[in-house]
Length: 205
Image (cartoon, rainbow, N blue to C red):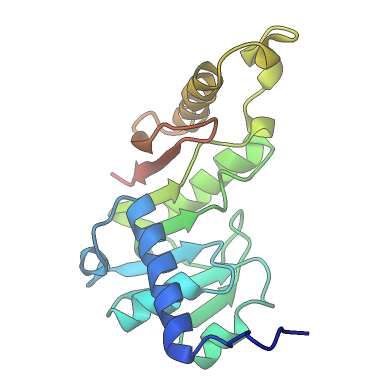
């Protein structure tokens, strides 16, 4: 039960929060504003409740939001956002469908198996148009995809500095990603902590 002083946020206040969160995602993936996505066919992978897609659409972006779970998409669909249920490892889209694909806090960085990371990259490259790009972040790959037993000697991970730990994980993440495409780039936004803020870009040449 809410306290007597609790005030339900207005639709305007909720809308402002959604706008701020969406612009944070945009900046975490290296964009200054939504204008950079206008005129492009955009796909968001792992969109969840599609807040970002809703904000993008309101800002004139042609976007499709996709997630493996449909339960969060109903509100966005009622607001006119194009949402589809998709497994990123095997999407229903035709070859050369999108100019830009975005993923924030989702695949491939959350996959614990290196095979799934690589297969996601393969699928994204298949559905990208020539000259298109896949941007994903906002940090390095999770531990399961990094073979930590070869990254640290026994007990070493507990003794090294947080900076050294993060540096090794960043380096190994890029090695894993570049084992599929040597041209994948890493752009660092902030190196604080064991999970630095960064994003990766894979282009279809």
